[in-house]
Image (cartoon, rainbow, N blue to C red):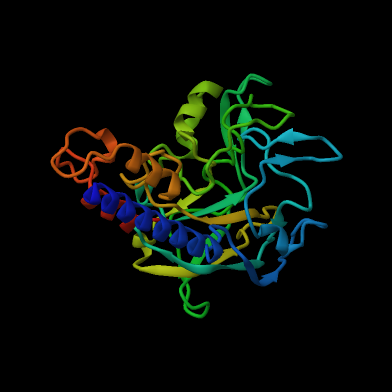
Length: 311
């Protein structure tokens, strides 16, 4: 009896410590999106009215055209209001910063660390059918920096291009009503396909290809030899008549930990509850996914793994 009581007490203490840790982390959590406009210089040809750089802070748009032509943001319907995207113009630039360092993390999906969202879109090969025709974008260079002073240009990518933004996973290509299943703006699309690699795909195939992601231009910091960055600069296109528009930038979330037992992208009290519900103790058997160390039971060693992965 005393042993059982002591065991329950230790679990309760572990739970209390975990919940305290969760509260502390929630209070200090960094935003996955840019939080500061460092500078903005509209270049030649920057579109009139689209010169408010503050609209590039925070999350990309999921729904556009409020009060004018309401529609869901999909790869066929990009954000287009002056309150949603900022225009760069030839010779112009926009510098944004995060409230934390964005790391070169090989554990990120496809090794991608940073995403840049614009209002690039796909033309429709058959009007209204949702079949990818061509990728419509306006270029623009991307540079990154750890200190805002020394800059490195990211090769072989353009800011206004890549994979057009997808706001919801349960909508039609020309939906006018928001869906209920959000895409993940911190998850990249598989870069091996390339935006142009999707030409000819129908809508169901496109959703499969996005695989829950929200689009954007993906950047692996390893390609520029940087361990981390905090600043991102978007420079205007070199050709007159082209003016990249920027919606947002995002820090990619690392792939889920095995300790993310409910699969929601974080390790927290909900996962702890699942583990405790599967508890067998040392020498027991079973536990399924909650057996994090693979030794055939769910005990203190599995609890230690979960707490070590706490987010």
